[in-house]
Image 1 (cartoon, rainbow, N blue to C red):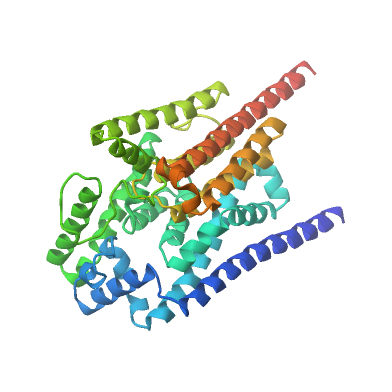
Image 2 (image 1 turned 135 degrees about the horizontal axis):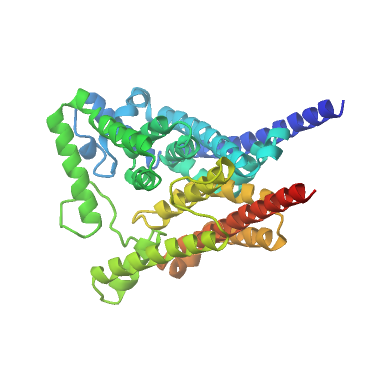
Length: 435
């Protein structure tokens, strides 16, 4: 009878948490749809015209006046939307983006609960739904921005969530998702060196094969000559962004020092260039910062007796939890060290937030819980400030430094929780032996 009441209570809580998440996403999406009738379709306008150009056999970059800055694969898959009026296509894209976010939040939350809250999550199936609801709420303004702009961030969010969830259990499928999402944005390729470090060779192989396949897929429609020309245009645009070459703005990829970027990379280049210092110095400083961040993360984990970014040798539960920490760190590195991270790209923090919440729930130490709350609150506060209010803070990539604080808090609290659990298990084993 007690079990039945508990199951019913868990079912009701799951319904409430799921309903809250859906209502939140519906509200954000409804406002974005309303905006479609009072303004242009923002960034989706460029995706739409690139997809329409691909359908009609014309130049996808010229059709969007150079504002379409993605590989041809995105225009290729969006062609069905190009067959309908632009505003209708934009509304459908907003609806799809909402579905992507909901699925990503639930997948990431379920994985975080599996890694950190094994028994509790099995006994109370509402826990992943609670984590998903809180994580979505914490990043609601960035989800809203992605809906309004009609951007691809929600699609990338789902791809990252699936990769993090499946890379241990279904490595080939995870690799295929990395390849597919990297064909939309190259950011996903950060998983390939990680797979190699972890000796997850099947996932690495799947990533490379899938990336090659999806990048070449549009050539079946437009021909290999035009596909090769598009690839050359893309790489010229990327080289121009980094200041390596001077190239025409066929693809208007903003330069690394653009004022809208909140990454550490852009902040470093802005600081050195504003003081008349060479870009080589900025690159050297970036390497130093990157090494220092990784060293700090490894040091904190080893201080608590946890090995990170090494092939799995520990028991399954510890390995799952460590992989969860590694996934959060990877998301941070992708955001903080990308030269093109704007505030809306921080929607990917939803994945980091799911880990933070799971670690918080798994944590008994009050100090670690307080640290996580402070770091999360600081992240939300900084990312919610208006552009003009924090121009100087953005100039040095302040948002990324705040996310670094959250990551360090997660790694410290998570590795400490694993250390405490391991110590408790040893004590229980010793008591059994002496008993």
